[in-house]
Image (cartoon, rainbow, N blue to C red; front, side, top):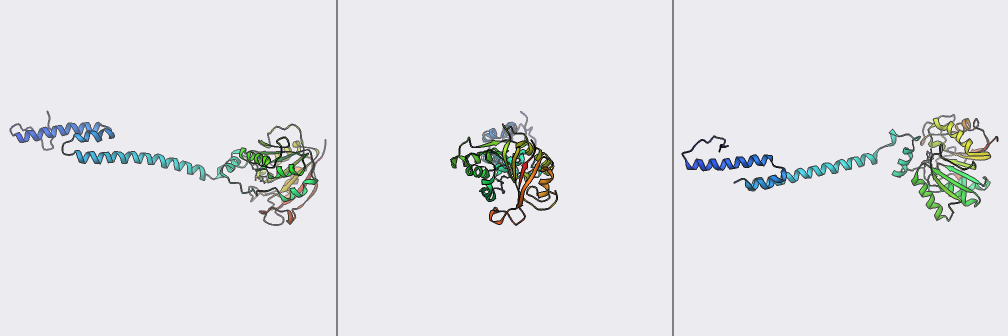
Length: 303
Ligand SMILES: C[S@@+](CC[C@H](N)C(=O)[O-])C[C@H]1O[C@@H](n2cnc3c(N)ncnc32)[C@H](O)[C@@H]1O
């Protein structure tokens, strides 16, 4: 048997040396097996190493446990990091013309526009608005949908939003208000694509126009012309009014102006019946200053 003693051991004379040699040879084969063994197996094989057993056994068991702990921690940190990345992800890479932008905001509860009540001016003007079929695109939680329905039991109101969560909120508010699903319905869908049976007598737009990137404004007006029946009314509550002209700097997400509405609605076949600043008595609590919010009643002309 070859001797693995570091100093060499071809000695055969001395009994002492022979015994030492045997001990080293046994240790050498054990160390060899030890190196090939897995970490768990090492805990057992180290017990075989004469003289080193307590030390190897304890330190390698400990080492093996530390290694698996590190592996576990790595997995946990990776998971936490990915979760945080998802949660903290800003929307800078998303655009408001992508449904995912809005769904993402609803899912994260980032809905600063939600004032928790219907717009006071809508409540005030509702008796003057057409009965029949009404549509509220981009209805959010649906306060305005419920207000229109409550004011006139003959009015059938549809709330439309991209977000399923928003529609669910509207439905529970409807149920709490004791309104029927025949009178009030919420549709999860895209304003530009959703199916409807017939055009509406009234469409009410509040903070939907400003939610669309300006390049969609012409398309918005063309779609409104399809949705509002001839002679029907489009009621626009224009917010946030920041500038004159058709610019859209600021927001959120995009600023509006009376001109921005008129420049797309008039060519699409709407006539302005009435407009003005929202009187202070009917401003929403969050609306900052006079002039930041205007209203307009537009009639769809033509057959
Ligand atoms: C600024 S929020 C206003 C919500 C509501 N009008 C209010 O005042 O509480 C705009 C809403 O429009 C919805 N929305 C955006 N694009 C849409 C689209 N193409 N079709 C339907 N809903 C849309 C969003 O999900 C969001 O709820």
